[in-house]
Image (cartoon, rainbow, N blue to C red; front, side, top):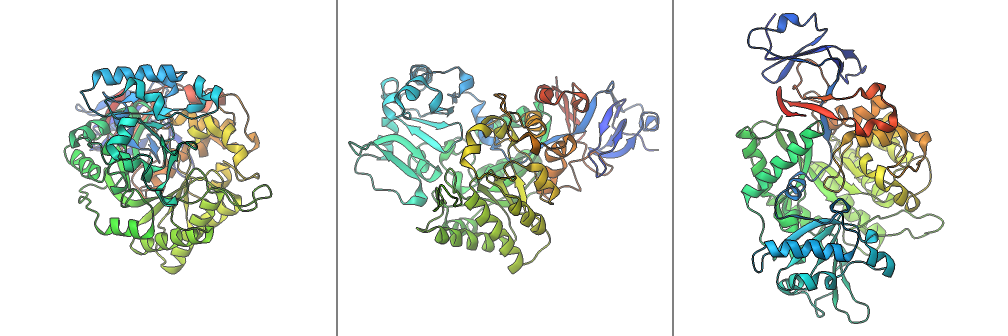
Length: 560
């Protein structure tokens, strides 16, 4: 029996194989699993040079996979110079916000841009009392000479101060935006811009005038994000990069970031595996012409080891906020697509031909789709693409999918269309979102989707929400939000399937289920050790289970 580099013994090893079987020990050689079984049975794998980790009865799981996150942006937000204006920063008022911005301006050079995100306007005293959003006048007194860009917690609203608007040439006489370009909010009385811009194409109008961060800063951001993921038991994740992000968020997720990932892989600097989804468009505008033009001129690296970094997917945006299907109290539906077109059908046609063409070219396509009309349109287009140009399981998928129906999931199961939801987000916002969505058995019913054959891969949407996957599992199996409100508890998931959502299903979404996602021979040695038994823990306490060790490729990348 060949000796191993690493043997983990005396554990409760949940393999997450097709039977969700358990064993006691795992042996690793050159970063790959070579044996699983009992501690006694694997004793022969231990030689003079073998590292042995006695798990002491602790649970060993496959490392977690974050199927949807903005990793480089997450890491940038963990670095110096970034201004966290979210609730965790302790701000409760506009005055508090001004204090944070004043502090950042004091540290910045004259004229240097100040960037941050995380604000929730309805939690700020003045905004709640006056029934308004933030505006540039809230920032101007403490930042007269430094341009400031702040994003809300969901990243779809940007607040710019007057200096930033001045540099961008945005004033009262600035042209009206097309619907697909987002929204430039104006004061109803004066016509002056308020400083609030909605959706990334509109953000781009300001951000293109701000210097982008260096490639060194992108690398540092990626490293910070991966270490944060490792602390949560993660050893693989997605990221969104591309020309659609060339300027927004300081350009930390621009197309060049793909080259940084690849270089880091070759240099052995990554502590987690990455599947990149490319957001290609010109000036942030989503349309058939813009997307195809950007794809045609895209410059991606040759990926040397696709077990570490690959880019097979194209990320599209479908709706602004939520493009909702008609129902009794909204006979014409509500919201709109981000794609051009006046009528719903025109927008649906534009989305459809874009998806079909990307599918024809061999891409996997994923679409940000919150509202029911968006989900219906994307699912129909994915199915149509497969009918027109059949190929083996492209596994196109919906990101978010809040307003799903069981009819959607049955069709998705037939056409092998996936879903990447964020249970950690539902844990926080389900109470707010539920009234906006259609009623029925489909809302956040991840168990039913999985039972219908849909690949359901959980993500965090970090930095919008925590990459703590156990919090997502807790909501999925209890259906009780962080605030204690039950949301359709009858739709709770089985614990085993909730764990699959963050392990093997994430690998399956990325066509990597033969490489990772479960603890089986001939798969990579990516593991996490939990400080408490998730299988013998009150469901309402799962989110607080600590991770005590994370292993990626047979190497310990985090130890508590």
